[in-house]
Amino acid sequence: MDNNLLTPDKDPMGAAIFDYHQNRKAGRLRVFSSQFDEDEIPVKQLFRTLKQMPILEQTALKLAQGKILDVGAGSGCHALALQEMKKEVCAIDISPLSVEVMKEQGVKDVRLLNLFDEHFRETFDTILMLMNGSGIIGRIENIPAFFLRMKQLLSPGGCILMDSSDLRYLFEEEDGSFLIDIAGDYYGQVDFRMQYKDIKGDSFDWLYIDPQTLELYASENGFKVEIVKRGKHYDYLAKLTLT
Image (tube, rainbow, N blue to C red; front, top):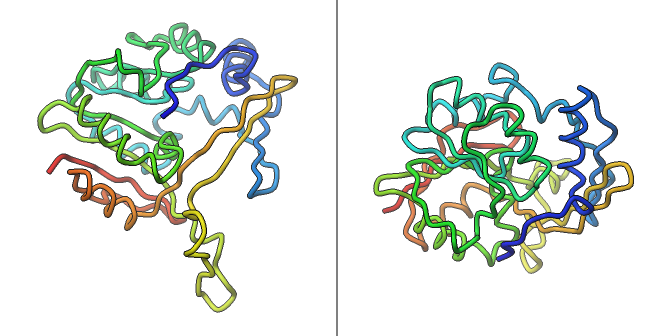
């Protein structure tokens, strides 16, 4: 699995976060995919407060206990909310610009770090993976390596709190059935590329995983899954613990 860091010339999201932090406004953060039409991420949403967060995120932050690892922390909105709740959190991201913004915003423990960096050997009671946190796994075949890494980073009795979405709704027919090619790649695997102004990022894989598939792979790799809460549109929050 990829354990690289980003460079500023390949970090459109970091540049957008940095712009918004500096100016309280930002340009369009454009998102491209071979599977979907062009989309856009509202940069302001990346700076949301606890009250502005979706209920799945609010629930995860309330459940997070002990020493917490916030993976792919971005602007630091979740880490800041946890600090306000008097919880101990370490925020990591592969974007130097995002890390700089988090430091300036007051995140106490923030590090420029890839989750899969083998030199990172601390352990945590809660590993927090929000904003479709399963995406970092990339592809379905990476799941065993992901769970192996989680075993290295989790303290005894610890848990992963991760949200994701089931993309099956994209394949829904008028009669309510779902037309999914079971012989093809898993339907939750998506490729993305982002652009902010003239900064173009590289293409990357992102994994949306349905609850049943997550439970299957988790059980095969020594974890059990509890679906803590379901959202309004095929999204859900899962708690994963070692069996």
